[in-house]
Image 1 (cartoon, rainbow, N blue to C red):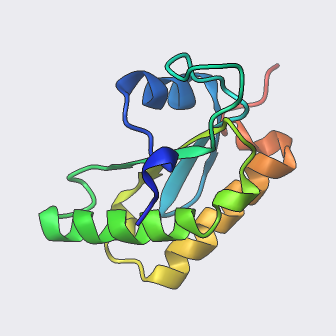
Image 2: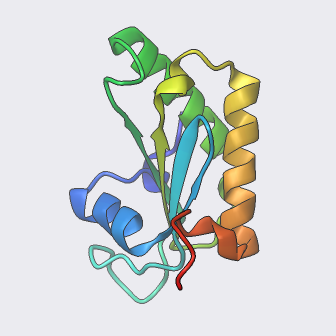
Length: 132
């Protein structure tokens, strides 16, 4: 289970991570990452802990499959919270293939995406055409 203080709950926090953060896509999931975002809802000047949220749509599968994917992703992110900087926001969006993927495949894709985002790889921002 992901500790309460590490969960994204507000719509604004999800929107901030998705719209203003960077992203890294993999075959099974997309990770949106916003580093060092300050929490306007937190009291004081200190940065809140890293927080994560999950988006698993009906395209992934039925309710049982979606809940299984969410549980797996929560477990995987919980084990990786120490790698994330304080105050960062992470949204993990499962893609349709995640419903049939096993735990190791999800872990590999999550690790690769986080490595790209935390390592500062310039290829993490979209895969559109190169400017002319």
